[in-house]
Length: 117
Image 1 (cartoon, rainbow, N blue to C red):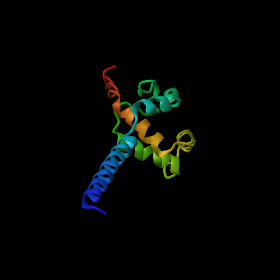
Image 2 (spheres, rainbow, N blue to C red; image 1 turned 135 degrees about the vertical axis):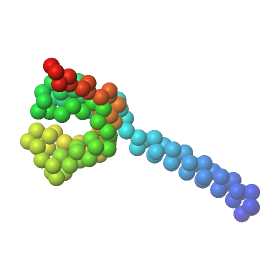
Image 3 (tube, one colour; image 1 turned 45 degrees about the vertical axis):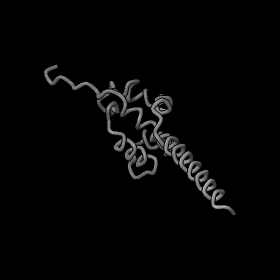
Image 4 (cartoon, rainbow, N blue to C red; image 1 turned 180 degrees about the horizontal axis):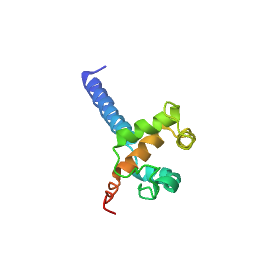
């Protein structure tokens, strides 16, 4: 083989590799819009904007994504148990969890309660 052919082949392989790496990297990024859609079932307890109207249920708006991922995976895997959350988290894929966490992390923090009221 000629050295020119080898150089062109190497350049082509490098370009393909770079494109694949970019595609894989983008595909792994959490999708806030997909998280919003997947979190629709969460609104009943955690509110449509991630702010719960019941003090028994936590506000999720503005929570850090890694924290939410950790908690949802713990519910899903049974290392953290709750009669409501465990069955809700069971069918979630890792991608679902990442997307849901990104959605809630993208929301504004819940307003602070005024202690005087």
